[in-house]
Image (tube, rainbow, N blue to C red; front, side, top):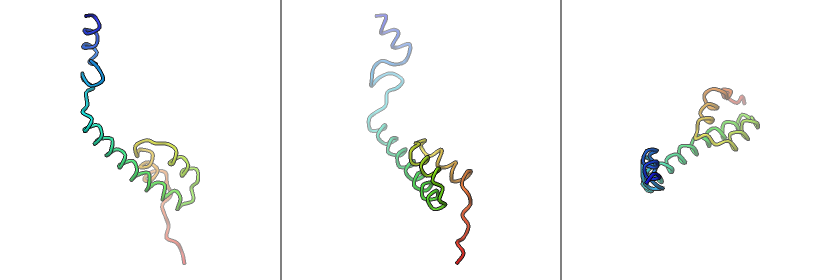
Length: 87
């Protein structure tokens, strides 16, 4: 009886119950959106870092996963602006 009261008080009543209950379909949809979001930003940031020849940033962006936060910061704060190539 005591464990039931403690579990209900904390809000966790098992793997699919309580405050943390999420339907598998909802979890998959949110996960898929986050993966697509992250891949888009990572692709843009990696492309810019490679184009500018910034190896350190390229490796950091490739290894560190922050759901697009580091990639957005790199694109809009830390990267150099691209200058047109002179012919």
